[in-house]
Image 1 (cartoon, helix red, strand yellow):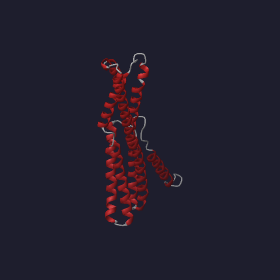
Image 2 (cartoon, rainbow, N blue to C red):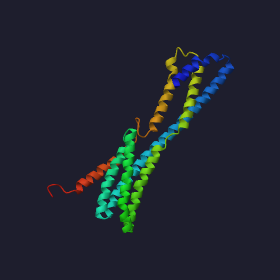
Image 3 (cartoon, rainbow, N blue to C red):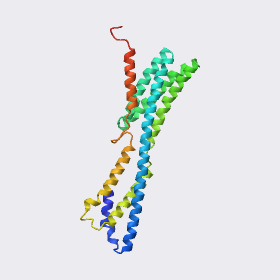
Length: 249
């Protein structure tokens, strides 16, 4: 699109360009102002994408901490619900790791549905204990479960929080105008086509980078569930250590 705008600006609009010095001076001012505005908007949008990316990484860490803390607090509960909650939390953790991997839309919906089912099962398992044992230890376990459920909601909200389409439209419109002006002001376009294509190439790379950072599931730059994977490995090691070996049975 940007390259086509440069070509249109030179092949079509340059026919209406006058050669007087005043017009050339005015064109230079307009070009400078438009390119400056485009640079500012690209920088601002890039900053928005980076902030959202950093927020998603922080929330992934918070989610791993919440699950790990509740897994430990489950030891304070009676033996039966404690064991069940730990099994559910391990399954829940697996679903959260899958959520961060690249999936098609239908698979992602199934992961979200399974996550919601596990959340309901965790709460239903904890609810009878909370009603029968009203003490500080139970309240601690309930608070930890709330953190687990809330952290998933915060993560989901951050993944939905993308750069608005209106911002993309405004940035694209200004980029088209800037490239039209570049083509309009070019005097030796046919002899330096590769030189004039550098600007639309840079714009296209900038757009791609912003879009890639703003897409948490797809693209090159993704949110890796490093903390969740580390927690899963830690829980697996603890489970293996605490389980009696075959020779001891």
